[in-house]
Length: 252
Image (cartoon, rainbow, N blue to C red; front, side, top):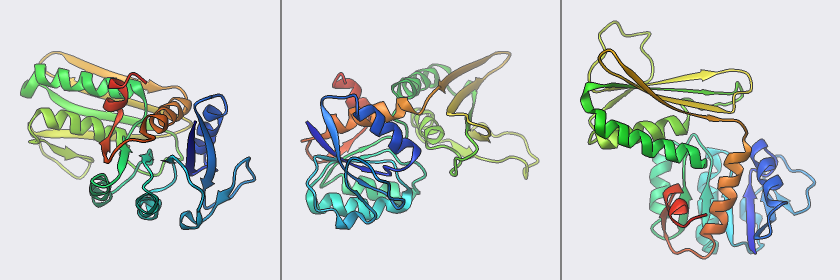
């Protein structure tokens, strides 16, 4: 049984994780952390440093500002971390990578199996199509999402850029530019509206043909399932940086 500390337990994703865990036999939530405390069937703390209870793994669906204290807690207690929060800055991502030298850290900007499959398909498409196709990414989310572009859009962009040996320049806005598109541009566009859970399109536009690879999330539950699977996977792991590809290889 994997004992879990759930950060962001009062939020929408925290609620989804609680619902998934309630129907699992291999894990349980032993404690929660949130700035908005709720009366739940486990103790909820408003300061992570005040949590003395031992847990096997920490699952984070809170806010980027909580990252530093979260990593400090995990280092102090030698606890694996599953980081599901989006909107980290480049410096924060670097801090995550540094923490993984002494901690088991699972970090993915999207916990969906389908999105991670899409990323592999995007890499394959880019390796086949190459410089002859322009690449644009369009992502759409609900009107309550704060960060833009989404972490998933950036993950997909990085996948393309990696195939092109990091030669691409990300362009987020063209309204202030009056010039032709450069060959090494990778456009990333954000849409916010309604209750859209998550839509991602990767467009490969060539001469007289367009190839579009896409993924549509129908429910936040799929991200919660991925996070819980990652928590069970990470319990007892050694230091290092893990992601969805490790989870897929493990067959979970």
